[in-house]
Image (cartoon, rainbow, N blue to C red; front, top):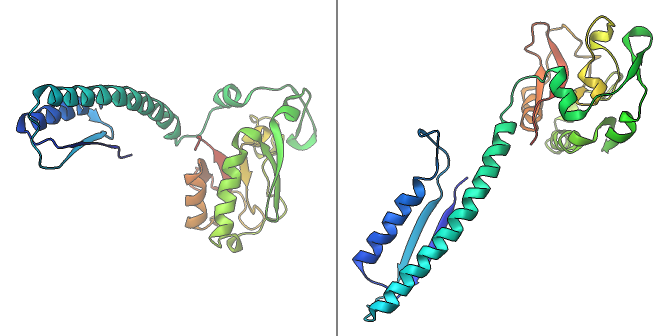
Amino acid sequence: MNIVLIWNLKNVENVNTILILQSIKKFLASFWKKDGSKDISVPLVQVKFGGTKILKDMNTRADKIRHCLNEIREMHNLIEKEIDEIMEASEINTNKKLLKIDEVKRIFGDFSYKELDGGRIQILDDWEKKNIVRIAIADVFMECNSKISHQIIGAISEIIRYGHKKDFNWSKGSGCFVPRHRCWKVERSLSKHSWGIAIDIDPVNIPYGSDKRHTLEIVKIFERWGFINGQNWRTSDAHHFEWARNV
């Protein structure tokens, strides 16, 4: 982020005025430090002067400086608030670790369920009705969590736009919302698929535990859209993309 604030004070040609405004610039810049050491993107205060007429009325010059100071104060307060909001969002968006189940429940809610055969579960309450939506991108259809549907649409749309869909098959087993245990084993914890926040893409041709991979372009697109790929896990799950952060 690069913020440039520009004040055009025409008909001002005075070294003292320039020095005052340069001091204001340094003062403003000092506010954009976090923890006393790390600088974030500093809003640069750029003051431009135009014209050659020297103001003879000192009161007029003082009024211009006072007006400039008021504008700087108001703009600084506004930017400070916006920077805080951006930094707060940035702290969320830098997560590159998998969420634990208690974190998933905190963000996406919990539900009651009963066990079915083969490691599947049936959600008993109205959580699914409130949270799961059906989306379609070209010929790709799936059910997913409404809170992250825009990120899934964004990732797959970008893959299609840049011609990478030819590199995989949206075949049997591909999908997002599938209420079940991890690896379909009842003794394991619930899969993130149960919340509709994980996507399996082409598991037939890129099976669990194999050394096959999606292309680097596809992995990078999903990473930009907030997902982690399972290709580097202890047991490779390269067809699996799991939500980790908001974008």
